[in-house]
Image 1 (tube, rainbow, N blue to C red):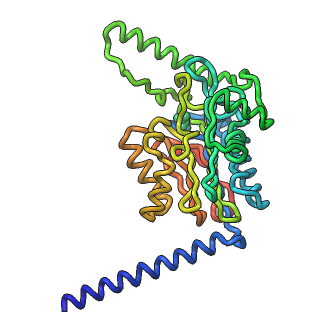
Image 2 (cartoon, helix red, strand yellow):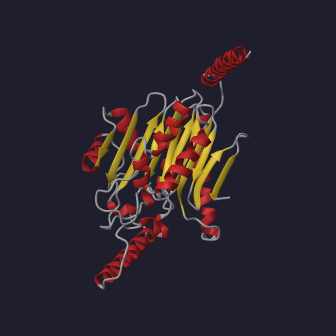
Image 3 (cartoon, rainbow, N blue to C red):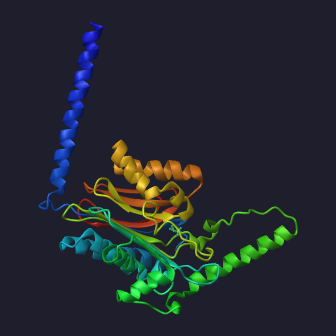
Length: 358
Ligand code: ASP
C-alpha cells in the first residue's frame, strides 16, 4: 500500500512539473511575440544615505523633475518602437547632462582632483556589451560604451585609447573643466581634510582605520545613474554610468563598467543596473548573480535581487542597490542603503518617482 502511495506521489509530482513548465514556456512565447505591447522601463540616480529631510524641498523637486524627464524620454522611445538600448541610452544621457548626478557633468573628483568616468551597456538579446572606464573628456560615456559594443570588436576600452576611439566615432569630447562643479569640489576638500586629520592622529599614535571608508562622505553616497528596459520586441537592455567615488585613487575602476557587476542583461533572465560601493559589487558579481539565480534557481526577479543585495551584499559589508526588469516586465528594486533615487513606469503606464526607503 505504501509503495503504491509513493508511486502515485512521484507520478503526480512529475505531471505537475511538466505541466507547469509547459505553462511558463507558453507564457514566454506570448510575451516575446512582436504583437505583445508590453513595455517596461526603470531608471536610478544612485543609492546611499538619503534620509528624509536631508534634501531641501527645492533640491528634492529638482531631483524628482530630472528623474521624471529622463524616465519619460526613455519610455517615449520605447513607445515609438525604438529598442531597449535606445531607451537606456536616451535616459542616461539626460542624467549625464545634469549636474545633479554623479555621472557625466556632475561626476565626482578623484584624489588628484580629476574626473574619471565609467559606463557600460548591454543588449539582452545578443549578450553584446560595451564598457568604458577612466574617461576624462567624453561628455556622454554611455554613448561611447554603446559605440564600443556596436562599432568595435571589443567589450571594454579604457583611458586614452577609449578617448581616441571616441574621436574616431565623432563622439563629443569636452574640456576637463566641463566636469567641474562646486558641490563635488567641496566634497573632495572635505575628504582631503579628514584624511589629513587621520594622518595626524596616526602620527600621534592613535588608532585609525586603515581602510578609507569613502562611503562615509555624504556627497559620495549617491549619484551613479542607470536604466533597464523591456522593449516591444521582448528584448531586455541595461546601462550604467558614473563618476565613481570621491577621492578614488588614480586609475580606480568601479563596478559600473564591469559587465556582470554593475550592469547585465540577458533575455533568458533579466536586465540589471547597480549603484553602490563598487568594490563590493565587483567581488560579488552582483548583476550577473541576480540573473543566474533566475536562470538556474528559477527565482522571481525581486527574490533574486533581494537575495543578492539584502543577504550577500549586506553580509559582506557593502551597500547600495539595483533596479531590474525581467522578460515578462516584472520589475524589482532592492537596496540596503537609506535611500535610492529611482523611477519607473507602473502597470498603468504612469511614472512613479521615489527617493526614500519607505
Ligand atoms: N558604483 C559606483 C562606483 O563604485 C558608485 C556609486 O554607485 O555610487 O564607482
